[in-house]
Length: 380
Image 1 (tube, rainbow, N blue to C red):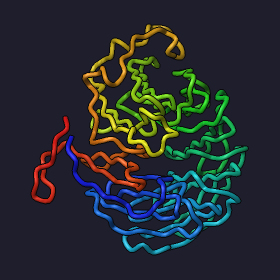
Image 2: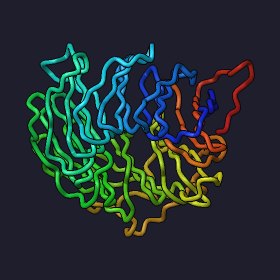
Image 3: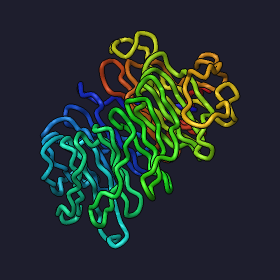
Image 4: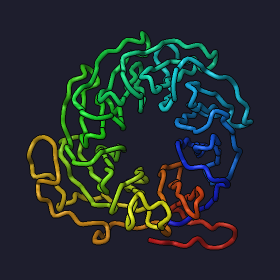
């Protein structure tokens, strides 16, 4: 991997949201600024949200949505930076957004927003009209994801819900987690959820039944990513796990960081993690956060499930190497104060780091190229 470009974002804002598309890198800060970059790391523009911190972002082509602290959703034209319209109706902070297009309405753009009072609204983006209000959650809506006519939501009330976008009806409520459900994947005919209770569960999209309990970990699991036919999870105590969606068994695990794994993504078949080491997450000034790349191209016998059905846990007694003893782990660049987010754009890996008290955007690539007339430095 080679560094492609680096950009230090001016100001003292901290990263509160992040979104990438095939054309843009979008960074929302807690000072109310949305920084827009192209996929080469060039700064396109800065949009200022007057209500404060940016807690949710979603984009489709040149249209950007951001969730606001006052319960509104703003619609921007990315190419010009123009505010197109504002959706109002939520009573509290909007922290979940998703673009949704369903069967009978392909010609128009629809968006779903979820807020702190547990309400979900479906909007016609072109007209600004609210089409449906989905009520049922009793706490913050954290994640939204759609598949055809189906919308799935997760909440701080320990549940996920499956909705019909066409009618606005709740089809199924997925119960089983004992703490807030923070991450969500809708994969073909299945729903995968992860929660602060340390569990990863798989559900049927067709009838809401639970198909498998993948994990019962002692620390919260906050984020999931797909890796081919596998699902990857990060934990707040430094672990990465991978399970096969064919067998529902764990086949890979690593103690990836000393403390919390703060970000994960998948880039060209490799798992990329950002996390805290050394002084710990509470040490905001220490240079002890790293971005690491993990190669999962072969079955890991050290962390292979022992053939038992049901959830895997570290109590199984696996001999699992830490990052420093894994020949398939590579560190990208130097240490940072915090590794906030990791994402991908076509041909590049994106990392948002805290260095020198400010936000730094780094883009990495594995393609041979030069930057500014000098050869890029290889680190692997």
